[in-house]
Length: 84
Image 1 (cartoon, rainbow, N blue to C red):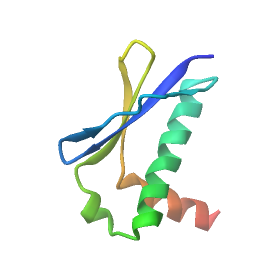
Image 2 (cartoon, one colour):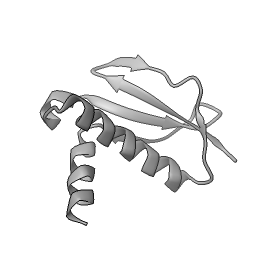
Image 3 (cartoon, one colour):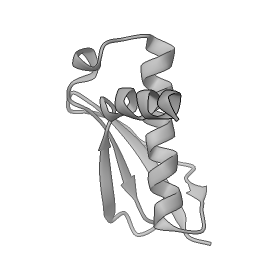
């Protein structure tokens, strides 16, 4: 199974994920990144504007960026889950 890393960028400051997580697919990695973003929003109980410039960069084992999820998207994901 491929390993994905979920690095947190906060206004240009990097908090690297040094452990990574083995997941079956890129789609599974995207869902995990979205859950991380939602978790940050719910833990801090902050407005999406306050996490402007915060991103979760998902990389593969070689360090290649697969995609970036803005943390502010976590608010959208929470609202979508509540509506479902």
